[in-house]
Length: 131
Image 1 (cartoon, helix red, strand yellow):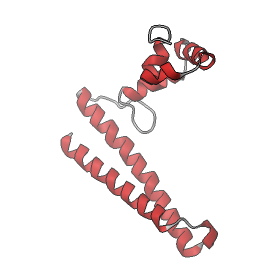
Image 2 (spheres, one colour; image 1 turned 135 degrees about the horizontal axis):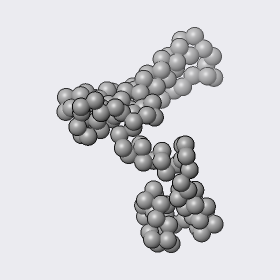
Image 3 (spheres, one colour; image 1 turned 90 degrees about the horizontal axis):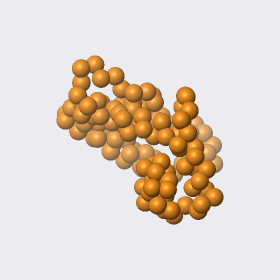
Image 4 (spheres, one colour; image 1 turned 30 degrees about the vertical axis):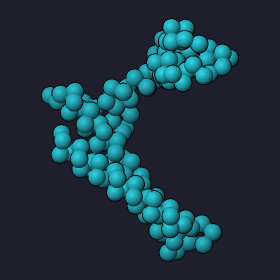
């Protein structure tokens, strides 16, 4: 399959589109190419690439440059991810203290959650200072 035969699929998956079997590629291309009102797969992918915030809506420009909007969108998404990780960490701690042993996650999982939180918070800090 070539990029010209399945342009939407190729734009979405890149070179990986070349590995898809015909019976899968054709329906995907048709779906991606459909010009429908409302939420579509291709439309969602394009919005994500066009500075979509963590709530799934485009970030409002309000006098900001495109670069500033991109940085704010990254901060917004990273902060949403950090919140989810902290909620998971908090829940795992509650289960560790008050729950059944069978429901507990291991120390490696808790440490992984902590490291992910640290990484995201450091990323947000870099983005805030760069913006």
